[in-house]
Length: 321
Image 1 (cartoon, one colour):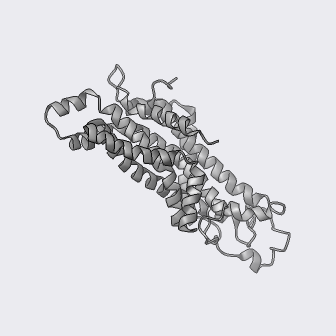
Image 2 (cartoon, one colour):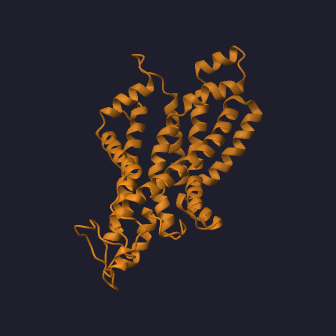
Image 3 (spheres, one colour):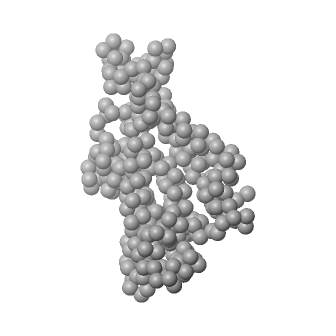
C-alpha cells in the first residue's frame, strides 16, 4: 500500500532523528548497543538467516546447478508438448519451464541476477540521494541564509519526486529509456533517491546543533570540513537502515518492471521477475512456474524487511522493547 506524500515525509523525518540519539548512560556506543539488541531479536535472526541463504545461493549456486539454465533439453527430448509441461521428477526437481529448460537451475541462477540488480539499483539511489541530501543538509545547517535557499530549492525537487508513487516513477523512467537491464536498475534507483536525500538531510540538520559541531566551529574549523568529516559520518545510521529496507523494495520493483515487459528483453537470462512474467500464460498448465519465482521474491524481500525493521528498532530508543 502506498503511503500518502505527507505520511511518507513524516515517516522519513522520524527515521532521520535516529542519528541524533546520544550514547547510553553506560557509555556504550550506539552501534555496539544496536548489535547487542539485534542478536537478541528473533526477527533480526530470521531475516539475517534468510539473507545469508539467499546470498549463498546467489554466489555459489550457479556453479553447482545440475543443468545449463538456457539448455532447452525438454524440447529436444520431445517431453514439452502443447498443453503439457512436465512437473517434478527425480532428474528435474522442479520440472521444466515452457521452453524445456530446467526450472530449478533457472531459479538458482536467477537469484544472482536478482541480487545484482537489487544491489546496484539501491547503490544508484543511495549515491545520488546522499549527494543531494548531503549538500542540502550542509547548506541548511551551516550555510546561513544562502544555504537555506539552496536547501529549499533542492528539497522542493525532492518533494516533487517523493509525491509520485514509487512504481509509477519507475515505470515512467523505464518507458522513457526503453527496456533493458540497465534501464531497470536506473529506474528502480531513481525511486529511492528522494528517500535517501530526505533522510540524510534531516539527520544532518539534527547533528548541526550538537555540541561537537559548535566546538569545531569555535575552533575555526571550516564548515565544509565539519560537514564532511564530522556531521556526515554521524548522520548515516538511518540511511543504512533505509538501504536495507530499500533492497527489499528494489527486488519487488525490479520484478514488477520485468512483469510489465520493461525489464531485460533477453528471456534466456534467468531473472525471477522475468520468469514470473513468462509463466502467466501457463498458469492453467503449470502454476508452479509462477509459484517458484514468486516465493523466491517474497521470501527474499521478507528477509530484508525483517532485518531492516529490526535495525530501525535497535537504533531508535523510542521503539526499543
